[in-house]
Image (cartoon, rainbow, N blue to C red; front, side, top):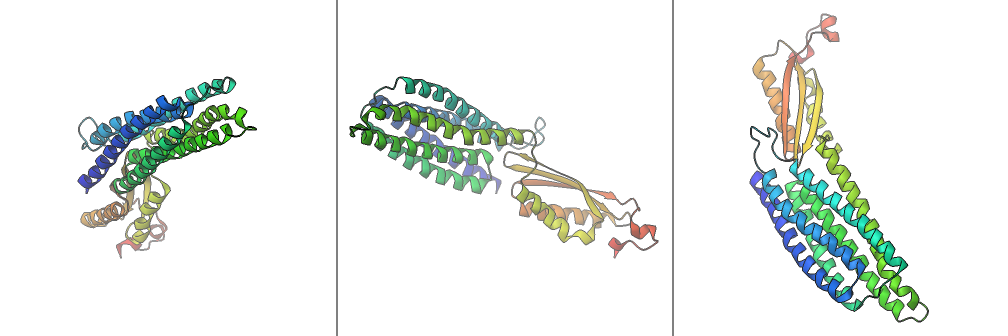
Length: 314
């Protein structure tokens, strides 16, 4: 199963790599032909995407290495580092290009061959949304946050390419209208600013999420509910559970807690209860490791205080 998940991740990274190469080539050619600031922003995003795809390919291989003496919990957190790197660089590009676009609003420049910009954007949209669909599919199968982040990047880039394509249509319409012609040169820098703003919001959310995960964030709410289900199901077989702790490391989840059992219970029976809980939680939550520790009760419950027999022994 682990090997299968690794295959899904490798497939996603290779698709991302080849798509980004195609996008960089198409956008570079379009930039030379059209001389558009909006295409320049879009190209910058693809350059980041290409760099991250290469880093992601090697990060996936590292993340799948088994735990060793130097990293007892494995190398899963490298996926969050990759997420954070991509988000921070994208925010940097958005801020830099927004300042450039603002200066171009003061002195707009002429763009050439807008129809080439439109058709290149159409091709880019197809590649982006097609790539996003496949990468999200692989992310779901592998459970990898880094692959999911790459899918978000592709989808976001698809929306951006759509906006750039629409801007060229508007430019051609404005240019051919006597009343609107003076506004045509402002469409390109205005689009670049809009693209930069759109880029910042999801990039910030991605950076925030990845940084929190690097700080040992707990598992998401759905997984927390899956932990409670077997604990509730077998509540009559142990006294209580406590010290529940969870953390996320890449696509891997680590869960540990203590169960209190009657001190008179045979050790093998206590071990069976702990093993049963571990098994059911691991079946419910993919890519998780569960450690259940046993401790004897302190004989301070109401039944013992009232000189009644322990209810968990019968």
